[in-house]
Length: 451
Image (cartoon, rainbow, N blue to C red):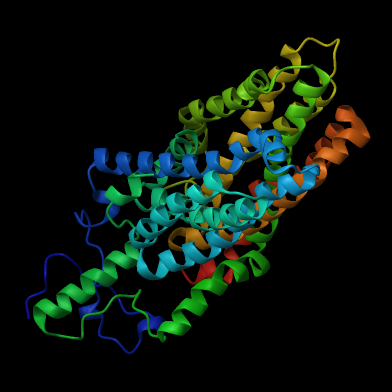
C-alpha cells in the first residue's frame, strides 16, 4: 500500500510494541494540519480569542467585590463574610472546573469542551443577575466558575498548542493581557485529539484498522475518564515541580486576591474615596502588569542567551524562570511599599504607585511560571496547570474571607507587612528551580516518559 502523504513512519517504542510502526499516524515536517503550522494570522486569532474569553471569566470573578455593598443592602445581609462567600464559591468552582474540564479536553479535544462551557457559563450569569436571595447568587456563581474553569486551565494549553516554543512566553503574555465568543470560531488545536481524528479518517478511507497513533486510548471509556481526572491531582501531589510551583504561585495569587479586600479598606475607609473613584486605585497594578507584557521581547532575548540544549537547539525551560526570580523580589517590595504608605497624610499617589512593582512582579510570575510548566509538561500542560489551579483558587477563595477582619484588626501596615514577609520566605523557590530545575525535571517519571 502506498503511504499517505499526510504522515510519516516513525520508529517503534516500548509503549506500542505490539503495533506495526509502518502504520503509525503522526505529524510530518511542515504538515498543514499541525496547529503549529497554521497561518500566523489564524494562530494569533486563537491567542486573542483565548485571551478575551479568559478575561471575561476573570472579570466575572473579581467584579463581584465591587457590588458587595449593594448586595448587602438588597438582601439585608449584615455579615461581610456571608457576602464574600460569593467570591469564594466562584473560586472553588474555578478550581474544580479547571481539573475536570481540562482533563476532559485531553480526552475529547479542547473545542468541544469550549463550546459546551461557553454556553453554560453564559447561562449561569443570568441567575445571578435575577437572584431573589443570596443562596441563588452563591450557587449560580459556583457553577459559573465551574464552567469558566475551562479557560483558566485549558486556554494556556491552547496557546501552547499553536505556538512555537521560542515564542511561547510572548503568546502567553498576550493571552494574559487581553480581555466569549472566540472559542466558538476556533478549530481544534490539541495535537493528540487531531491525530486521533486523522487516524480514524485514514482507517475509514483505507478500510484498514492497522493504522494507529500513539495517543489512541486502550482503556475503557470509564478508565479513560478516571485516568485523566486523577492525573492533575496526582501531578499536584507527586511531581516535585508541580508541588513547589503550586505552593508558590498559590500564595502569590491569594495575596493578589487579598488586594480586592485591602484596596477598598485603604481608599474608601481610610481615605474617604467613593467606590467609583476607589476603583481607579487598581491602575497601578494594571500598569505594572502591562509593563511585564511589554518587556517580553527583552526577556526573550535574555532567555535566548542561556545555554542551548544540544538536542533541541533551544534553552532549557529553566531559562524562563529567571523572570520569575525577578518577579518574586518585586512582589514583596510592592507589598511593603503599599502597606506603609496606605494611611494619610501620605499622599494618595504613593500607594497607587506601589502597584507598579507589585503588578510587574505578579505579571512576571504568572506569565513565566505558566511558561515553565507548559514547557516542562508539553501535551499535558493543561493537567499541570489544572493542578496549579486547585491550589491557586483554593487559597484565593479562602483567604479573602479573613482579609477584612485581618486588615481591621492588624491595620493596613502590619497586615501588609505580614503578607510581604510570607512572600519573602518563598523567594528561594524560583531561585532553586532556576539553578537546579533541570536535574529535578530529569528525575520526573512523567517527563522522562516523554509525555
